[in-house]
Picture 1 (tube, rainbow, N blue to C red):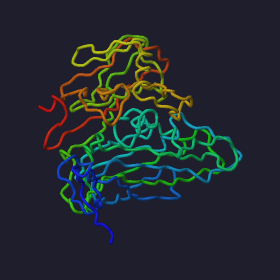
Picture 2: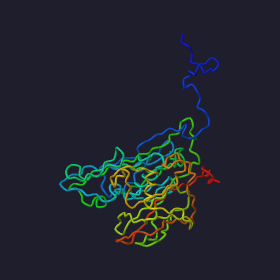
Picture 3: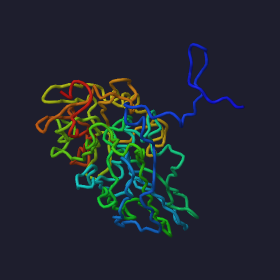
Picture 4: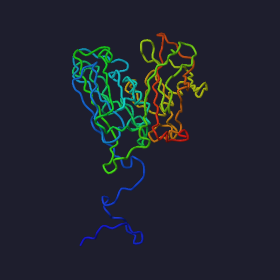
Length: 395
């Protein structure tokens, strides 16, 4: 007769042999202890033309959205012409992407594909994006650069970009999306052919756009389970300074992206031809409320970016560990370790208000194509009803 499974008995020096399914679920603990990682497809298109507007509805999920994944595949290109890609291609095939929650609150403004590419590179603290170089979309197995040689496949490419929603590995800021009558809204405006290619194929490719929805699935026996401070959101803001960086002159250029808990600042310098240029000051300054917190050689900033993110194979400059031209980034997610990760405890986060004054200063390099523009991509957290949960900033 078989012996029945028994509970652990330290006195008789036996271990527990009860099947897991016979034991109740322990109470308490973090949200991710009980929620399961899940993913489903939002929608997929095929044969879509360059320049098209996609407003298909997303799918409701039985839990909390962690991110949106956008895959773009160009196929069917061919012909005798050699193809030349634009400087920001293939990412700029996404002319504008807007994401709003079910109530209409903008989480991602009308952001272009190249800016979304930079968010992937330099927001490595947000889950699913990756870290330690793995966050680079141009280094993923699924990535295929634009085929520039003539013949079959001319102009074809494939990439994926993540729109992260949750702030860290605890699921903070994951978005409720279980009501099929009120789902978040994603609008994708594709760019024209002439934006992506400066020299097109004889027969241009068409596009397939696939949108996927990773989420935390709530167990059926705990339908009220939710991340802490549900309703909080991790948003991104895109602003262009009203001040033009001068040519070969000193100026503190105002950055208008303030007002909440700021975790990432990405700055893009473009000349009057919209070309990215490395014309940042040789000694670059970061000012907050008229106090100079950073005064560093610009190559110090580049080195810190590499230490923070190690964006191996950015997919633009080509070389491993390369930095996209015309871009500098600051992170406030390195309080635990120099390399940014989703485990950061946000102790180093930059607390701002609507009146906070952030400036990037120094003697800007010579720009033959004036006026220049400085664009800021700002990652910030908007706490929900329970308030900011990390460190002394929460009050």
